[in-house]
Image 1 (cartoon, rainbow over the protein chains, first blue to last red):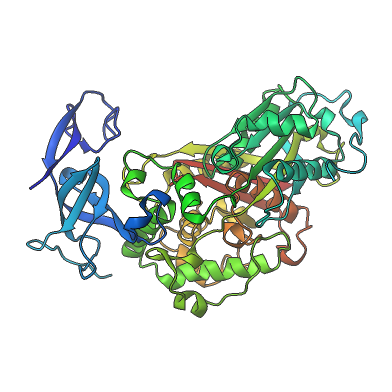
Image 2 (image 1 turned 45 degrees about the horizontal axis):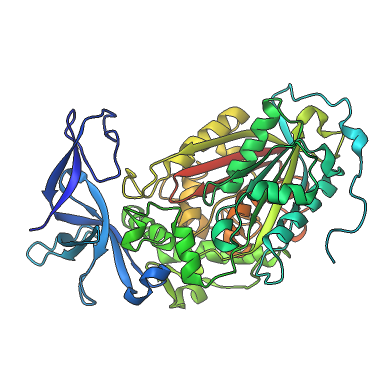
Length: 117
Length: 410
């Protein structure tokens, strides 16, 4: 399982993805780099059909905000294939970090549960 | 023909003996704008000068009495390869030598932020008459390039590099809003239909097209799912301007001054993923609290509002966070007609960013132009009846900046 580097607050223990200068939870300094598991759930996502000019050859692609350990959120790309069932709360895992971009895929072993309103 | 025909110095006598603002109140004494649309033949300078000249004419003044100038523009350096924009426009417009010219860039909230700087200049006593122009010339490059220029208002290293665009950002908010509150595609379409209807009545709007909920829901052109082309604002060229002075002197210039009753600007997390809840803009909540507090008013007092509908979901979130409806009720309220021209509180009578258009730097200024027109009862076919209190709401990025102004008839 790939791991991802985030910051941990030495006072309250809160985790946050960069950029960070002070702890967003308690406001104290003293952030330490920490590697955490790349397992998480989809917080929200969108498949982009009108891309940035620099990513035209990759469109459509899916951008997701993933919630990792301790509620720490990160923006990454979701490469799940056209048949994958995407929903908020779906289990995902980090598969690769390429040029500083985190790529996630759906976890087949722990898909998560879709909530209906 | 270059330049503008007619008299340039209209009424220099009006400013002699004028005192610096002491009442703590500022009024809008002149408004002006270009048509909004795609204008291959007009330069950024042409657009800015036209809006500025019209606002000065509306105030019945010449440029020589303007004591501070603010120019709102987001990406002139990208779209038209021009920086140092404030003196570029100001000196061509004929500002007296020695007048401070300041460029304000706060992404899509550049216009609202520039107006606020103008108000502060009057309140601080450093200027008696202020001109603010907002301008953007966007139709110089293909859409993916426009998308890339706009994306620079996000965090390149942590969001944009991933492939995040602004349609994508608001799509992620929309998906979460649907999940948390049951908002539907039909609710989003109701915003589109209303703003297209209002835009039909605005001769200066970029787009004039009647659409129905069915047409919107059947349209398959997805930009960033769940947002479709009909959920997105337009790529527009245009400029808008306001002239302001201390309220005690406003009557010297116009019979219909519009008073700034309150204003607020606030920030929030720059990145979307750091927001506690992506369905809420804390910056709007705070800017509104400041503005309503200063005005001594409540959301229920507002008759007409121009809000930042860069995407349909943004209007739904805006009317919730401004306090017009409870959280989660923005979609149903729009579908029920509460925000139509004849509704309880009219939202985006101009057609909004959706059909009036969204020349990024001009948008925040134009919101005040539209609300001033409404309060002066000069909005013709789209006039909101008995409009006495108006509100403008302008956001930058994914809500990292919000600016709210509350205006009133005096």
